[in-house]
Image 1 (cartoon, rainbow, N blue to C red):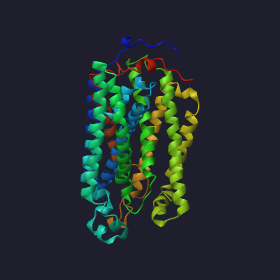
Image 2: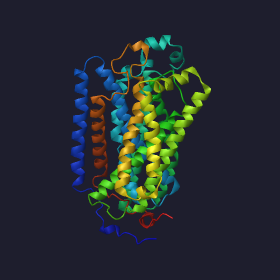
Image 3: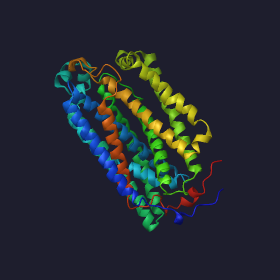
Image 4: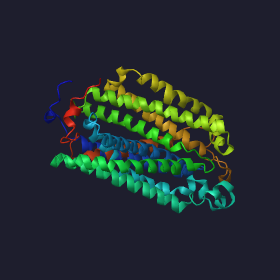
Length: 413
């Protein structure tokens, strides 16, 4: 066991870095979103509808990062994990953005007619499959579900953050027990809300298609992207002199192991979903994959197999990159990018794919739009600003958590 870090000698707050990140992130967010809106207004043809799909893509991406961080917080509390205590406040900061990020769901509620063909009254009345699902797939119930998901995520993540920061002040070990007990029922609700949010936001883009494993597929992306973002944030903070010694290569090693684990888990779930649908050969299920197995989407499907599994699998299988924070942060940036591509592959083939909407200029293939890039930059800006805002004025480590000494001396076997 190595010598413990003297936490009192660490720089434990963002200091001037916080306001700078908030201002810079907000500026990038506003400029990115406003530019995308203007581009959609002046674009010819179906620019506004293309904006709606791009907005859904990028909101889902940024939300998945925060949801994944929320999941890891619950796991840490439920399992009483000691090794990760020193990392927990940063995870709390990422998950603590949910009260801000759920506001981004409001435009999706307004864009339902542009996104979901089941919202068309004529389709709901004439399409046999949609008519069968109309009790679930209707606009008022859809918006009510989004509101429920958002309220739970916001309230639960805020409560955990406040309880943890409160322990910094009073040092009450009972707070750890209360967070542990609360996390058990929060995990149950998280599983339900994350699963049905994936059904509602993404799977229902094609109301004819269904996959009971789709929620797990989305969850795998959440868990992987949040660990990847954590690796980047930790590297950045330490490069700026914050918590420079408390978080060691031992902690990075375990973060890297979790990234590697969910690279494999994502591939397992992706293959399982495809194999079961291929084997059953039900027309309502196979059509969704057929669109992605034919030109021009075929090349992106193949690229995901190699880019989302084989390449990161080989890159992270060794312990060496896991213990080098710069390399791990670079791997995290790559995995965040490929996670965005994965969501693009899930969402964009549905743009213009349904005949009742008429032919669409932009549905011919996976050609990235300027709006995709602008909205991606905007969401990155909002995420950075929200994390910095949440962590302002508090320690970057839960300094009075009873398990902190064990975390500071953690070593991999």
